[in-house]
Picture 1 (cartoon, chains in turn brown, purple):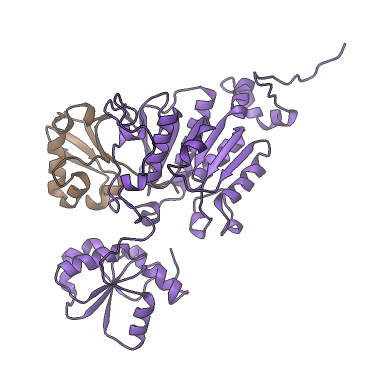
Picture 2: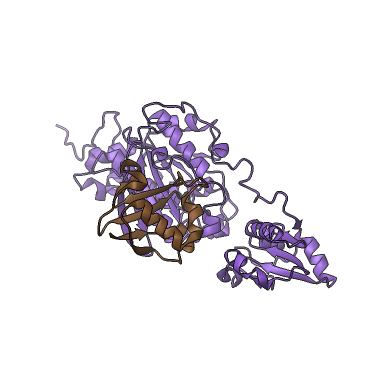
Length: 92
Length: 394
């Protein structure tokens, strides 16, 4: 499935400075794997050492949080947008 | 028979608007969505702002201008030059003054008819509940994870809405948490990032207008909550990308397993948030434990006597353009690929802006087998303070 992956500002330096990527994948997990295979520096920002998605990084398919879908097994369809939304705390 | 002209509207608490106030708020009063009733709601509202910085600036100005009857401001910081690029409450002459003092003067000047209570203190687990208790709405404009979790937990425990905004470089997030008993910050992000993984505004920079936009969104949501009008930004996370000039909205759900607002609450009082965020005592001073260091004065002495030292600047090229110590520039991120440019037989002093990134560089180089490598303690900032004040600080 051809999907679009949105990279947040904080992670763009680790993803070739791109704000989004087009890729092919059948599930959210596959899309993220494909992303971190291309940009290996991203891996530690997205996953813990034991391979779980970090708890301050949320992944959305369109506007829905994958924690409330099928997590990384969430299927995706053509035209979907996956967004990586990490916690940011700035305010000053 | 007396002729009654301009009977002031009375509220249930007897508060009325004076002729001058009617003029001041006329653009509100002529809209049915606000009207006299709404303006009196604003006059009775009590809003506590956490932080008088980038988000707090537009927030304070708009809430004061709108006639929010009581504004509380919590901040312990002092205005400095680097604030003026975005913290529009302050003027150049405020540099060096406590933020709450400068903010109170500015807001009272804007609207003398409101009450402004200032709290020059760091928000802690010991004072948060007491401070929040008096207020109807809490607005989170802080700049760090421990305080954000603290604000969240205190709001959930007291049942108060938390109007949230946060920023990073060109990107902002906003939502209304815990309204009414909706999702909270922990539902969105159960845990904070480990220290060092996500840069702060001081490290990462922020475009000055960004907190203006996000803070204004928080002000708008606060006013809507007070007026009970429109659709509050609850259960929705608003993302703003300033570079693309694009707003997006994501669904924000209440997490049934949330430790503070979920079905089985395991957090029933405020905790130690620095510990929760893993930054016990490390917030002020960068972590340099065990990293061999050289102080700016020692470095100056050694350079003056002609010692052969290789100065390695691990900042980014755009930072080098701001100021430099004539070092050799290899940004930290490129160091692993460019390590062969370094001569391990020479003594190397690594530096960055504050000493944090260069500590990582020194640790990396030591692990890579470099024996004679030191971190410049406190970086260029300390060099400017202790050796050469002509070097600008940024």
